[in-house]
Each structure stands twice: as C-alpha cells, then as structure tokens.
Length: 140
Image (cartoon, rainbow, N blue to C red; front, side, top):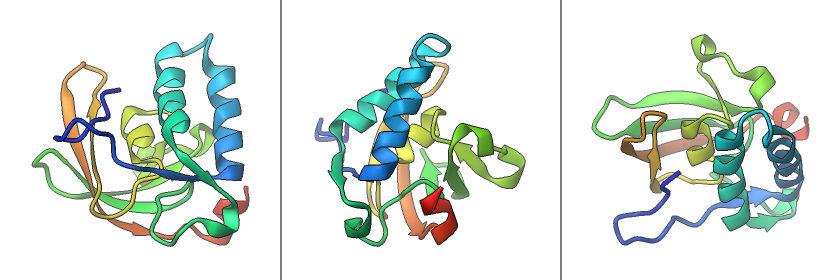
C-alpha cells in the first residue's frame, strides 16, 4: 500500500493496544493465505502509535467505528470498519483486510492517505468524519 501524503509523509495514526494485538495476530495468521492483505495491515500496524484502550482520543477510527470518507473526487461514502468475519458491503461494513479498510485504520477526520487499489492504481482517501464505535464493538 502506498500510504504517503502529498508531502511524502504518512499521516499519523493511533491504535488501541487491544485492537493492535488482535489485528497483529490476524495479520500473522493471514500471511500464508493472503500475503498482500497481511502485508498491508502489518505496514499500518507497524507505523501506528499504540495507546491504552482508555486513552484513545475521541474521533480516532477504531474497529467498529463509522467513517464518512471520500475516495478521490467521488461522492462521500459511509462505512463501519470491521473484522473480516463481520464484513458485509451491502450493510456498509468494510473489512480491515481490504485496501480501503487498512487505509482507514487509525485515521481521524481531516486526514488523507494515498493507497493502492487492487488494480495498482494510487487513490486518495480522505476522512470527513468519524463516529464512535458502540462499546460492544470496541470490547469484542
């Protein structure tokens, strides 16, 4: 995934310690079956600032959070960031293992990131708003 801003730097991201651990385990298990998705997720996890769950600032896109975002100049979209088993595009639930899902992880409103789609084309994802995850989603 190309994840650099126009200045060449990646945007800062923050991930809750429990989510980082669970996502790291997921990436490790996925290496043999889907190395590309595992690498995309691992790259994001490696560069993240990891904080205790209770110290994650409001507005950080976490697992179970709802995001409003725009890809390139397309119309804004809304989706919930979820683990692969909960993904359902018809219900606007995007897996963290997709290029868009991995790009969204840890961002906040106003941040943008460049990412490579499955076709290799570089796209720009911009977060418009983040709506907090329900407590049940954060605890799972």
